[in-house]
Length: 236
Image (cartoon, rainbow, N blue to C red):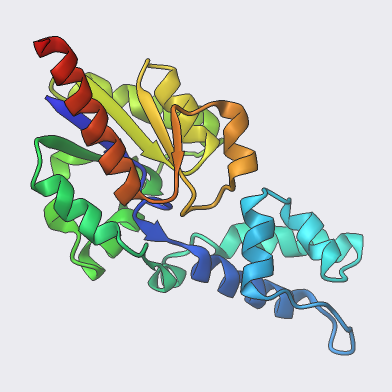
């Protein structure tokens, strides 16, 4: 069995609109009525997020004083993952086609995400993605779990998945952050990073994933191609 474990946000779901709307909301909440601030365009904001600029630094860049920048950062953490804001997420272009391609192959598909379970169920239903991920193939964070850091929590979730899923001859991981790379490498899993999510090439490359590609579609083709090459090598 050939298994593909994929993150949800980044490879499948585009969260940039949600993050940008929360940025605008927090900006307006924090600024004084007479205060002139710089409002970043969505592309400017998302580029800074992908390069992993801290929220406080984004606040300062927009013209906030230190205390305002801290409040801006606090509000962002409070609202960015709130359930009402999830409506702004939408599938990455080509993600559904990639999932349909997987459905036509022998790939065993699993989603492994730092979303809480209720945060995963909403977009699966809203965008008709449930058929690709039966409940037994979903690994998410319990609604009452105290999250620490993705780079610590994701390997734990990976361990749980590997302990519960049936054995597979080969396993691949697709994700968009350093946490995905660390989680996969901790267990000897080949990992592909995609650039359709919240990290840019410069942030991902130092963690040395096996491949860096643009989208889940490209990642699936890499996996299928490598699997075919391995089969040809074995047969020869």
